Structures are given as structure tokens and as C-alpha cells.
Image 1 (cartoon, rainbow, N blue to C red):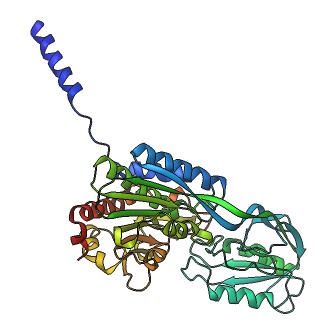
Image 2: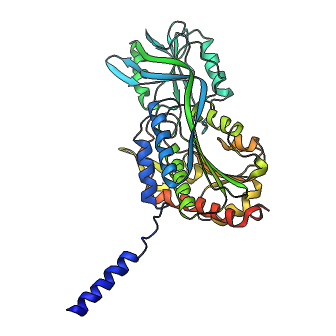
Image 3: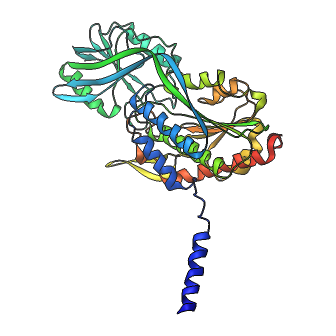
Amino acid sequence: MPRLRVLIGIAVTLMLEQPAAAEDFLAGTKLYSDVARYASFGSHRFGSPGDRATADWIAAELLAAGFGVELQPVVLGRQYFVDRATAQVDGATVEATPFWWPPENGNSFRLTAPVAREGEVAGKILWVELPYDRGAYLGPAHRAAITQAVARGPAAILLTIGNPGDDRFAYNVTQEDKPWPVPVMVVAGKDRGVFERAIASGVPVTLDVVGRYEQNVVGRNVVARLGASKRSAIVVSTPMTGWYNCVCERGPGIANFLALARTVAAEKLPGDFLFVATAGHEIGHGGMELFLKQGAPPPQDTLLWVHFGASNACFAWTAGPEGFTTEHKVDTALRFMVLSPSAAPLVSETFAAIEATRLVAEKQAVGELRDVQAAGYPNFLGMAGLHRFFHTPADDLRTTSPEILEPVARAFADAVRRAVERGERAFK
């Protein structure tokens, strides 16, 4: 018995002295839990409660990882906040979204009028349909279509924008875009039959909107720093805000961003690291614009800029008799790896297993990487894309999973490790 007690004592001592296994921050389950946390904050429009909660959460996570963190105020000239927006037809109520930017003198209104597509539309609600263009930003063609519709004299415009999810689609806009002269209300293609019946029967439609403009709206970038060496900086960025809940549009990028930050800190990678989560993406890239002017290291002092853009790990979906069902694979046709020519060798090594269309950005990047490239940063890589429910209310937790999140996070971490190890040699 004494010998047994000695052996047990030795075993217990060895167990207590055994270092705990390092946490794997790049594991799919960990990434998905961060996506779920992001989803829990609800709508992520700039200046909303969900936007503020997201910034607080990301700041707390980076602080816990060991970074020095600051919240950089981002002031945008205007934002429109919606409390309620519906179209009511013969007892049926359809959810609607005001098309940014709404008329400044029509923050809230209630309008009842017939719907028309053709003929004389003065005083009526004109129904306009825009085709799907796989774009995220309001462009000249959209403006021209609305301007032509307004010229016909309608009291308001009912707008359907084509998209694979057949839902209410929203385009990113800028602070410089002018408000529409009349209300423009976006409704889902899946509700098309309601308005077709209204036209056929002559039953009027009631547009009911409660909203308000606010000026000089304050949001925040989350800026985190780690390291104080003389080596060139590595900057890592991701947007936080967007239309609706934007779960797979923003969530995977934010999960990758946090996982990379925790990994950099836990592995004590040498060098200067600067992580920034930006606000205001959907209404002018205001957060990134500010950070590039105040906070970002100059291009000559930056080894690499890594960007986690939209929809980097989202499911492909197939239409079936009971709606859309996931194919349990990534929609790689709509996923893009965007990189500077100098980063091509590094991306070839570390992203070989990641299916995505390569865009070597000699002239034009996408999303907020456009701002980074325009500012003169020579070495950058990032991922961005679309998915079936992109920019619509249906973008929720069903759109991603641990299995498709993990490979992307590991590839980005591997790229950063090799960049740190090789320095400037990684880009020659």
C-alpha cells in the first residue's frame, strides 16, 4: 500500500505539472461561436445598438488577448434609422426597406395609392424592377433607373431588386449620394404576387414608414496594437457594419479577425501588429477612410495588409420544393482572393487548398481593399465575396458552419506566420 500511495502521488504530481494544451483559436467550433455571438447583436447598421454592442465585444476580446485597445470615434454626416417600414395590401402586410437615401422631408409617412407599372403613373405608386447584377454598391445604372422612374411623376416607387434569395436587397451607398425626390421602397421578389394581384384588382397599396434622419452620427473603429519591435507592421482589418443582420457577410471575417489576433498573441509572433475593425462600411467606408488618415502606419512602414472582407465562408444553396436547402459546400464561384502582385507567391503557398477566384489587383481591388490599395500599400491580401442571401434579411446563421470556416482561418494564419518569418523576402 505505501508503494501504491507513492506511485499515485507521483502520477498526481506529473499531472499537475503537465502544461495545459494550447487553445486552438482556429478551430471551426470556436470560429462559429464567434459568428453566433456577432449574430446575437441583431441589425448591424452603422450607429445602431447592434453596431455599438459589436464594437464593445470585439474591443473586449482583443483586450483579453493581450492587445492595447482604443475605440476610435467615427463621425458620419448622416444616417437614417428605420423603426417600421411596410407595404399593406388588402389586409396583407409585407415588410419593406427604404432605399437609401430616403427623402429628407419624408422621414416618416403613410401613403395610400394604386400601384402601376405602365401607362399614366402620376400620383400612383410606380413598380420598378432592377435586375440582379452581382454588385454590392449603388451605381450609375441604378441611379439612372430611379431618375427615369421619378421623371414619370409617381407619388412613390415600389422597387424589386433581383437577387438569388428573392428577398429585400440593399445596396451600399456613400455619404455624397443625394436623397431620392420621392420615397423608394424595396420589397422582396418573393412577395411579387401580392402586388401583381393589387394591380389586377385595382386595390390600393398603403406604404407605412416610421423613421428619422440623424446628423453627425457617431460610431467607432476598434483599433488594437501588439508589439513594439523595429520590424515593419502587419495590419489586419475587417468591417463590422452592414445591412440587416449580415451574419455570413460580416461574421466569418470577424471570426477570422479575432482568431488571428488571439493566435498572434498566443504564439508571440515577433513584429508590430495592428488590428482594426472598421465602422460605416455600408454608407461610405467612413471608418476605413478615417483609419487610413489617422492611425494606419505609412505604406513604407507596412510589411503586409491583411483584409477579411465579406462572405469568405458561406454555403452554396439550391432551390427545392420546400425552399432553399444548403449544399454543405462553399459557393466558390462567388468568393474572391484579392491580392497585390507582390503577394502572389505567398498566397500560392498558403491558400492552395482554398477554392476562390484569384484577383491580382494591379489596378482595382474590391471592397475596403480598394481604399488600402489607393492609399499606396504595396503588399496586401484578402478575401471577399457574395452569397445567396447577401445584403438581405435572410442572411443568418444557416449560411455558414464550423467546417467551412476553419480552412479559411488556418490559411490566413499560415500566411501571416510566413510573412513574419521571411519579412520583405516574402514579397520579392
